[in-house]
Image 1 (cartoon, rainbow, N blue to C red):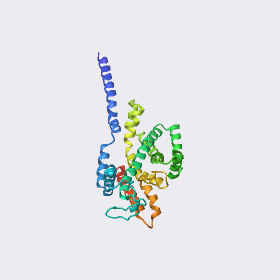
Image 2: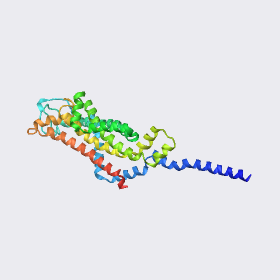
Image 3: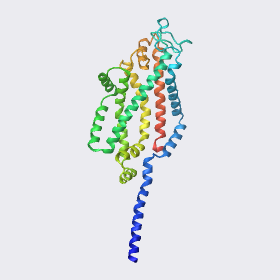
Image 4: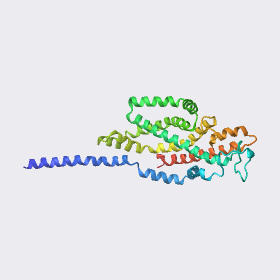
Length: 314
């Protein structure tokens, strides 16, 4: 009877130990399922103390409001032509002057803000979706999948962005929609590489091993554990890329591959302004200033966000 009691006690302790093991793994999985709220809270506090980043964020917010309300707040029809008032300098009636067709430059810049933000944000979102997916698959599975994806990325990175974009536009044709596609393709390698690098470091963490040990599906591990802890560099890259995408799109419009006249676009306005640099410098100055302010605002906010999320500052 004593032996039986000892055996039962031993079995009870074994079952108790087995039941307690998942509890040891639970904190690791909780960390994997939820990125540290402390990281984001601390980052938000650091970002709020960064005056340059806050100025950039304020300008971006104002540009977004202008882009949304542009059709309502423009003082003139941006495509309304009047040769009677062509090439008029800035005045009380036309704050930024008129162009070679007598169109109000201020109205065209306001409408152009919609195009600028569109060609900045939409391509980045497209590139983020494709690039993050490729980076996750390549980094997590490795092997021949990683080799194929990385060799394709290396080939794309071998071309300067302008040559790659022009080659894509040569296939798709001119137009603002094709500019969006071209700029998105140009940015896919950047997102794929940065996500792959993050995944390679994250997938060896203890909480990933814990998730595998508990038999969680691979898709769940990638989405809820790996991707959830790789968002910081993705967000920073996205913010910084928007400003560059605006420059890329304006450059393609400048050489005639983007928005087609008479639609208002800052790049197209720069193209028109270069022919009147001596007689009417305001034609190119104000669209160029709009591009400068917009790109600088996104860069200031992106730099502040990068510093705020830097783990070395925690």
